[in-house]
Image (cartoon, rainbow, N blue to C red; front, top):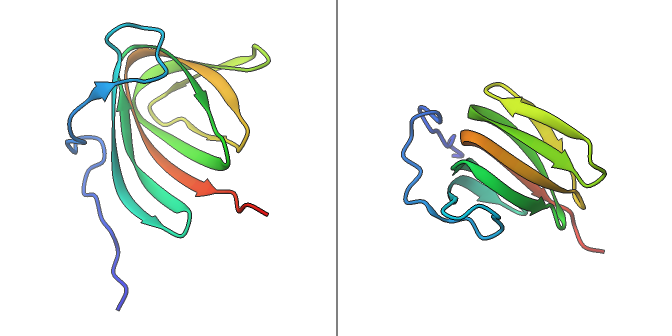
Length: 118
């Protein structure tokens, strides 16, 4: 029998201990990620990051993001930007590069799908 994997409230679950954000340009910025489920190149979980600015890439995977709380501005490699906040849904595809500026602690639900290597 296959059973569901459930997180009763992704907005309040304790995701664990924050660690320094590796790609930040803001001293003291931290992040934490809590994986809920993974199988065959697919995974999902909750991620949280404190205010600051960091670079981000998607090497070999697509990511779907649903913002649960907080606000940020994401600037793409070509300089275009968009604001995100509670309720925002977006996809950063494999090969994507950009910069995130977190205005208030941000929490998202993420789904990653790895791109098969030929």
